[in-house]
Length: 200
Image 1 (spheres, rainbow, N blue to C red):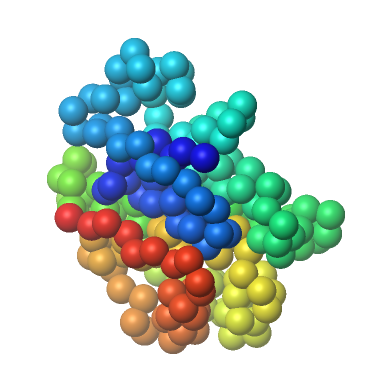
Image 2 (image 1 turned 180 degrees about the vertical axis):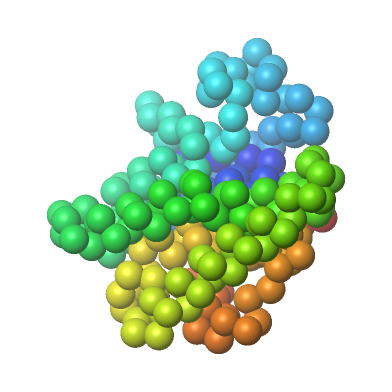
């Protein structure tokens, strides 16, 4: 199993974190997007869209971090990561994954691109901050009744949300006042296989 990744890429970290938490042995192939390597002929044979991360597992190739963590969960012997035979629980997980791709991206990841990578005008930071704190309030309320986001065992929803929130400092945001979220983050960090993100 090989994950094509860039160290500072949040989606790449998400894929590596999922593979590590689920106990997979994998190699990392660095694709330096700062040098445009994602558009090289070699990498485009792996992912024709030129996006990172990508996962290659024997004859299977998966692009997009959320698709990767779904694939890894379905392949895993530990069905708690994504119990898709439980329709109600799977729906709750899918809702959170959608939030990661949309609202969390538009708040934390966009804020990070503004504040740390200087890719957009700082005029957008206030909107990122407002949206992020609305999401944190929602997560904090959910976590008042359960250890993890959708129950008492971790799922890929926890991995997807955690992989984003761990970059909040690079977006100029903090989880400190959201006590349930802060507790949950510390619990996730104690899981076997947890790896820290690489930051600037």
